[in-house]
Image (cartoon, rainbow, N blue to C red; front, side, top):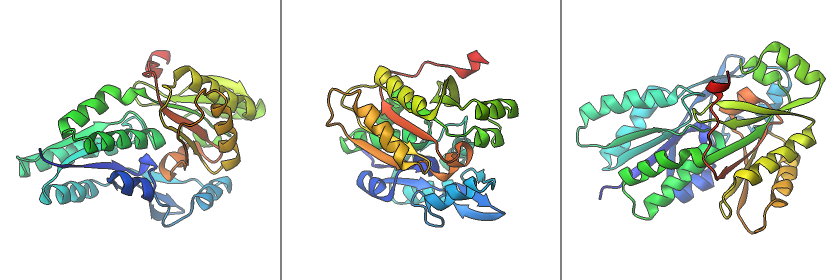
Length: 298
């Protein structure tokens, strides 16, 4: 059975240690501040996470860009030329056009390398949800599963990787075109905090609104307890608000009978962070399959 590589993108929020542990590669996206281009490094090589979010706190708009097709070509060809097939797992197409670029590159390279296998998957998720899907794929690979078996499992189970999130301010979602100016204005006045999930189409959908930061954190923990499959790893992700991440962790542990599960903390990376802004906090976990469809609620 031919070996295969797993390639993801800058939205996966997998740090260097996790990428090395699970042998996961990534192709970078980019962002710009005041016209200066930065590589959206998973290791925050060019700008630290606190500095990135402080730029946003200072009122500057950060622009993001998808994976360049040439980066996909380089990564895929390198794997093929070294005797590997390619499993590419990308950020939701509802949030980034990168996965569509991977499809185009796949189709082109399969004409050049007809004996190669390149499977590209829309994860319908982002941030640590995408990262958890990649880790699950890597674990299947280490168990000896083929690229087809691994890809099939990911397709069948990707909606079981849940996101429960809330933002501190609606300002950044307004700038990104995710909420109306009126919603952001009145939300700020009345201290409204949306509860945001990743829906069946991979969209970030606000399904509830609560009042106050503490209430929103408690609600994330409540929703988590309703959907979580016991024993699975949990990831708390935050946009430069470690104290609130710790509060969410404590609230979630309070919902668990088994306190010995792995609870990992991660920064929300620059690509999604540029839209949701500092103060965003989320929990990612494996559980009941997501069924909410935001398009039906519009």
